[in-house]
Length: 379
Image 1 (tube, helix red, strand yellow):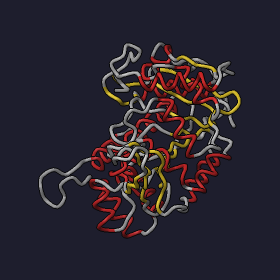
Image 2 (tube, rainbow, N blue to C red):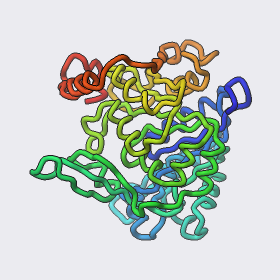
Image 3 (cartoon, one colour):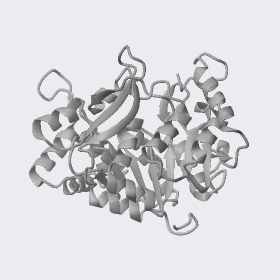
Image 4 (tube, rainbow, N blue to C red):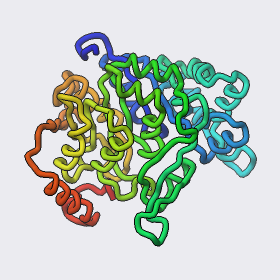
């Protein structure tokens, strides 16, 4: 792949919702610095079944437009027209009538999807309206359902229950063990597969882990593209577990789940917030088996605020710059958040599996009020 010293890198981000919006915002800042090409591609999950998206999906049989709309808004041109249209497509109707809760962009996309019949063409049309230099693509061109195996819902310990639907999985009081898609082997959007194969850097996450991040690995053609691409693959971890689907998950458990759903996937870097990783060695060990040769775990201050689990696009752009430059800070980044970026090299760890398991068990048993948890982001 091209190096940061050469032409800007072709970047692809995969995910959905607010997590993907944060990644796209960070990549736009990286593009402004000349590190990545401004023609960024977003590949978006299409399994949402709640809110405005769920209503339009059920009534019209179309792709859920909400996550697609958010990605389009994130990549809108930074000029008067782009900002005006971005504000409009994000506007949500109030009141109590039939339009209450619907975002204007959801209705616009639904109308184009219904009249054009081609999701990619419809997204390109809205992209042109917003002045996108990049592109927003669906993961698949048909709406999907998420089905999860969940424990902790019955009296019998370890009994598996099947829960279907993105909202149901995201809000389950049980513990999600594994997810699958319905239909089970959907066809990927060809343009999305091509974008991943031709990319120089692919970013997966952050976002709702089981319902926005992992689904990309459950589409066979897209998973194969992610496994075989020559791009540098970067995983960005969440700042905190989400109530429901990842309640109680540690940072290393997020990686373990990712590896469990795609054991053949190798990544070149894992980015995590330095204040959200109580025991860096555990994360290092969890990452070791899924990292490519020379791969790294990067701990950096990427949270927007200690009390709010949202990534700061500027800080995330600095962290991505550090990964792509292969240094502890992006050359010329100044005295901003990049100055605090810290790379943790992943090398051999001289510890037996029993000791690792014991340490993990102790870590999982630590209550959230224990002094070892110096940050409240994992509460």
